[in-house]
Image: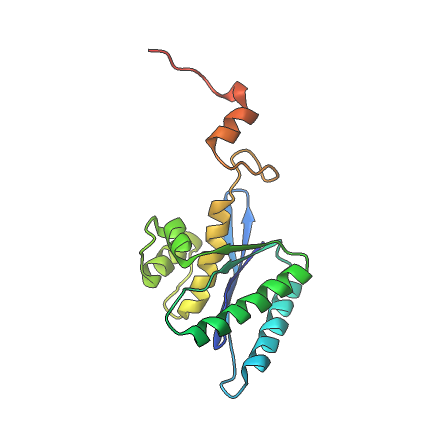
Length: 183
């Protein structure tokens, strides 16, 4: 089970995906709306509580989170970074390993194009996991993109317990599986 998070101080997107062998199953995709009247610290407290509840309910084994996109507004970036920090803190306090992916990496992993639009990413995710993305906010599908990106980045070549980082490591661990082709 992978928890995907798109951090935000107005809207926080989240998703839960179950991976079983080669099958991916969407368990939950949603957003948490922050009340506009709340001050920044109350929003951070709400983020903490909501993510703790999500982890308690779905019991994921890892959390993938989208790293903040660097914009020109320093105050917005500071607030977004705090929201991300709270989400990471909750996951770590619950014993979850955390993996952070840039928006570009997520787009590249899902579509093959790091410059893809949010709509293109959502469309591909909806085909992969067979759901209708048209009624969802982009924050929800961004969170799902982080979770699926994590799965794609950490798929195992041999089994679910051994992580292989590339062909070189695979060959060194399994020389008997490699055949030489002579001309």
